[in-house]
Length: 70
Image 1: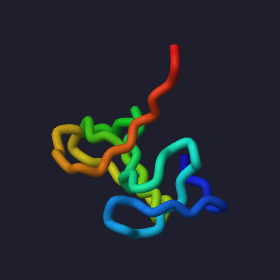
Image 2: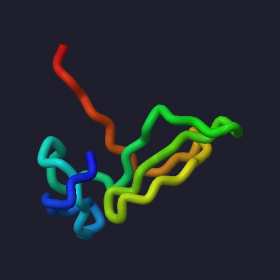
Image 3: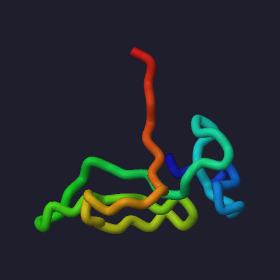
Image 4: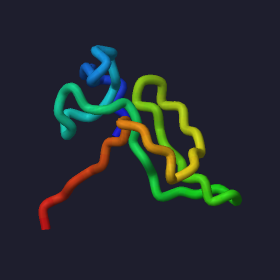
Protein backbone atom coordinates (compact mmCIF):
# COMPACT_ATOMS: atom_id res chain seq x y z
CA UNK A 1 0.00 0.00 0.00
CA UNK A 2 2.90 2.32 -0.77
CA UNK A 3 1.55 5.72 -1.77
CA UNK A 4 4.05 8.48 -2.51
CA UNK A 5 1.42 11.20 -2.07
CA UNK A 6 0.76 10.27 1.57
CA UNK A 7 3.15 11.00 4.42
CA UNK A 8 2.60 9.20 7.69
CA UNK A 9 4.78 8.85 10.78
CA UNK A 10 5.78 5.37 11.93
CA UNK A 11 6.54 4.19 15.46
CA UNK A 12 10.18 5.33 15.06
CA UNK A 13 8.95 8.86 14.23
CA UNK A 14 10.10 8.45 10.62
CA UNK A 15 8.08 9.40 7.56
CA UNK A 16 6.65 6.52 5.58
CA UNK A 17 4.57 6.65 2.41
CA UNK A 18 1.59 4.49 3.10
CA UNK A 19 -2.07 4.75 2.27
CA UNK A 20 -4.30 6.47 4.80
CA UNK A 21 -6.03 3.11 5.11
CA UNK A 22 -3.41 2.51 7.81
CA UNK A 23 -3.21 4.54 10.99
CA UNK A 24 -0.31 6.81 11.94
CA UNK A 25 2.52 5.27 13.95
CA UNK A 26 2.26 1.97 12.13
CA UNK A 27 5.25 -0.10 11.09
CA UNK A 28 7.36 0.52 8.03
CA UNK A 29 7.20 -2.97 6.46
CA UNK A 30 4.37 -4.88 4.88
CA UNK A 31 4.67 -8.60 4.14
CA UNK A 32 3.45 -10.19 0.92
CA UNK A 33 2.61 -13.78 0.04
CA UNK A 34 5.40 -13.93 -2.57
CA UNK A 35 8.17 -16.48 -1.86
CA UNK A 36 11.53 -17.10 -3.48
CA UNK A 37 13.12 -20.47 -4.25
CA UNK A 38 14.50 -20.66 -0.68
CA UNK A 39 11.02 -20.21 0.87
CA UNK A 40 11.86 -16.69 2.05
CA UNK A 41 8.92 -14.30 2.08
CA UNK A 42 8.93 -10.92 0.37
CA UNK A 43 8.42 -7.79 2.44
CA UNK A 44 8.23 -4.20 1.21
CA UNK A 45 9.87 -1.30 2.98
CA UNK A 46 7.29 1.49 3.00
CA UNK A 47 9.93 4.16 3.51
CA UNK A 48 11.75 3.56 0.23
CA UNK A 49 9.55 1.03 -1.64
CA UNK A 50 12.37 -1.56 -1.74
CA UNK A 51 11.50 -5.22 -1.39
CA UNK A 52 13.56 -7.99 0.16
CA UNK A 53 13.11 -11.68 0.87
CA UNK A 54 13.27 -12.60 4.54
CA UNK A 55 13.04 -15.83 6.51
CA UNK A 56 9.35 -16.02 7.51
CA UNK A 57 10.35 -16.90 11.08
CA UNK A 58 12.16 -13.58 11.55
CA UNK A 59 10.71 -11.89 14.61
CA UNK A 60 10.63 -8.14 14.27
CA UNK A 61 7.99 -5.70 15.42
CA UNK A 62 7.73 -4.29 11.92
CA UNK A 63 4.88 -5.89 10.06
CA UNK A 64 1.68 -4.28 8.84
CA UNK A 65 -1.16 -6.47 7.76
CA UNK A 66 -4.35 -5.45 6.04
CA UNK A 67 -7.55 -6.34 7.90
CA UNK A 68 -10.82 -6.37 6.01
CA UNK A 69 -14.43 -6.61 7.08
CA UNK A 70 -16.20 -9.81 6.09
